Image 1 (spheres, one colour):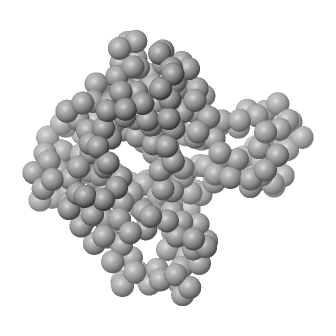
Image 2 (image 1 turned 180 degrees about the vertical axis):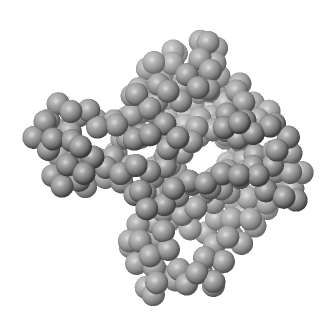
Image 3 (image 1 turned 45 degrees about the horizontal axis):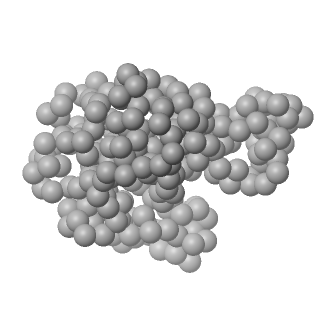
Length: 246
């Protein structure tokens, strides 16, 4: 991540009571400015990457554009409006554990859907947003963060879908037939073969999520019909999560 031409950055998803105590924000505008804890924690990590890790553009870093999340990338979930357990609890941690998940992802791209009234249509659209032809996660096992707004998550929950149900369905829906991926982006025959895909099989459905644990599904943001999708990088950096001491 320090040396890549890409613009990915370590996104920190902070769960647990300490996140609330210090004011890490997960509601309206949580990926943007205005929240001191989010900005300060993320910026501290970036300064370490720059000053201790040497990730300076034009020197150790070959990033072409960089990205806004290379300033700061830290948020929590909007648990007060979430219909489900947190990401941390879904992984076996207790609700009162202080847990950080760190995933290497791109800046969020927003999927706006104020039309869908049932989960299948909603999730098909989100799945399509997860499967960009130029995204690295189409051809490498990588991380994908999907931050559903409380409104989108609530639509699914109202229909009886659990967090695990939505996670599983997104893993199934997110992808494209290979013929679509050949039209642009970073498709190469050797990349297809590396994923055990016949490059001549145009009907083959290439999943954007290669392994279920590569999808990090959270509920964040304010009320509104929007889901944020953060595409992953390649398979040389994997997400980590664990309890932190305070």
